[in-house]
Amino acid sequence: MRKLLNTLYITTPNAYLSKDGNDVVVSIDSEEVFRIPILNIEGIVTFGYMGASPGLMKLCTDNGVSMTFLSPSGRFIGRLQGPVRGNVLLRKAQYDIFNDASKSLRIASLMTAGKIQNQRNVLRRYIRDYGEDSDISKIADYLGTAKDKACKVPDIDALRGIEGDSAAAYFSVFGKLILNQRDDFKFNGRNRRPPKDYVNAMLSFSYILLTNECAAALETVGLDPCLGFMHALRPGRASLALDLIEELRAYLCDRLVLTLINKLQITKNDFIRQGEEGIIFTDSGKKNMIKAWQARKKEEIIHPYLQEKVEIGLIPYIQAMMLAKFIRNDIDDYPVFISK
Image (cartoon, rainbow, N blue to C red):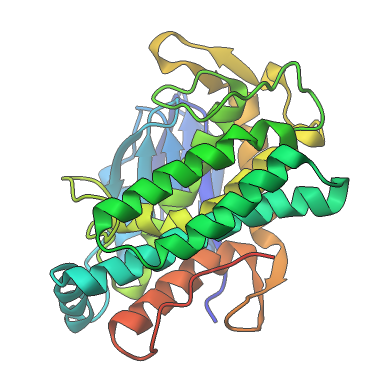
């Protein structure tokens, strides 16, 4: 099993990255503030515009370390990856499935059904821990029916309709899962680009982190992260990574957001309103969120398909590996990740 290495997150906007031998060096105003051996990390994500030296970029590509550049508010700028990995035959098989409407729909249906079931499990977990709530129970039942429908759709447009309706239903009661800080963390549905409240800012930020993890995982196993089955193709868009996060976001992101709010680990003081960017994290708030994300990745669960104890941070890689096995016809179906 793959070893979980660290992702280096650079949250200070005026930080500049360079290399010194085999070390990644972080400097602010030309003064070194941090360094780490390249062999200790598997990815770098930087929030800012200062950038990185060409020498560091080569060091990263030589060692299989991806670099992702985001704006200070978390919007995607670009991604640096070394030579294409994996067997060319695997990517050809991926392209063949993309061009086969029925096979492509099968993968998209499984991922969407997994997403809906994991959203349902978030609601059912609340009912189990805090008792019956008629509104939440009603939506949980609706999601159970929608999940079954997602497996039987005639085409991708019908699947996208079910996915959209299910997401709207799920988020219509998501605010009820917030038990503390309710006055500050009011939630009236999903919004983004830009997020208009603290909860949506947290959800969007966590989805960005997960998308980066999924893109790196897909590249690691040799798949093309830009050729998706559910999300439409668009230049520069990691469509397959966006497909993969669907089944994972409720478990890895939504539950983390609820935990941080309910345990008072994130408060309204961790956000600011910034013009067209909407609600964004302060630097300290961003660090708190990333710290919690990194800690969450180190927790262990029994993977529902492998039946092995794994670190949560390895789930994107495991699912990418399972997807590659299915595309190669090594397994009969794609085992979507379903949380408990």
